[in-house]
Image (cartoon, rainbow, N blue to C red; front, side, top):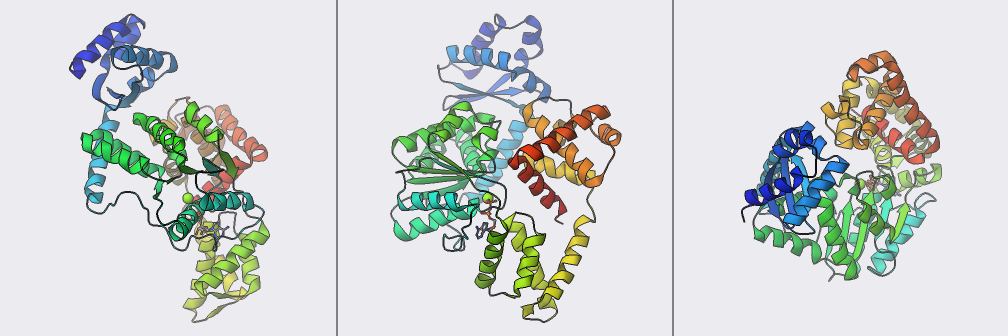
Length: 448
Ligand code: ADP
Ligand code: MG
């Protein structure tokens, strides 16, 4: 039967399930775009329509009727039509780019990111030990291994360290490292294209011995990505293949994560990586100096460790800046005096052009939400949290009065703005992850 006809049958059933208004206004505007791999993609003509039909009560009814017409395990994705076209266009372009370059499985790892180069301290010793264990005995003890922690604390470094270790000690294993974004793109491409590419996808992801997925917090509920990940996960897990996942937050803090994936992750080891303490920061800086051949006085190291936040990447950035500054003065050795001078300059340029727009854009980029949604009156968690964070940062970093922020956010009352701000500032006191997140966002914003 044609997809259109099948959908008509679904509509008939739905007509009896929802109110006439809901049916005429929203359900009847949906059109089927594709049915493939047990996924039915429906297009909504507008964001509003999409939001309406994705509401819990309605979405379940749609799924129920779809499943009775298609298969009992059909997964329904409702996306906005433009959004869908845009994602097709993007994957098209990407597909053209990678067509010739890509070799399936076997990833290339950054040679600098090894266990030897990773400084172990109180904040990361457990994570590091778990990763080493997994590298030595993949698929045995800690499976899946889920590591999480703030940006720049070494998660990607450790994943590559496992890859490098296996390349050296266990050459025959197929080790695949992907970012969550790459996984999603591969998947979207596979459902868009022919049967061949969908087979390629399965071949690529299910024939590995170790699968590492970085930055899983970006996993999207859209277009069945979680569904596919779930199947990939089960398949590998049942075959005793090792799965390692990295995220900037714990599974419980990932609001968009489907429950069944959350419970899969909990069946292995979930381990956090914390902010490095002062000694660890000093040790990391010293290691970096010896690796790169920097000649830097000890009190310069102390200064950087004190001045920098907890993001190791930012700290390394400050170190190179200081060394670069003294090289401009034709010095081979960096003294405290030079460092202070270099950092003075750093502090000044930091604050120059920060404004509310930059904060809004950074938040949108970080949380993957649109500016329209951020300003809108939508109340879903995925939008409310970034919005509160944005309000907090604008107030805290720019000292903009609450009423003015209210105007920026679609004419909201200042008490609403105050509530948002207070919510974050209370969370900073009680939840170390929120604190970490705020620090990270601030350090992003203070970068040029
Ligand atoms: P994340 O993935 O957690 O955001 P990365 O793994 O990209 O962080 O780390 C950022 C930078 O900091 C990298 O250059 C990494 O080598 C370095 N780094 C982080 N933690 C350590 C550590 N404990 N020892 C040495 N280098 C580290
Ligand atoms: Mg990373």
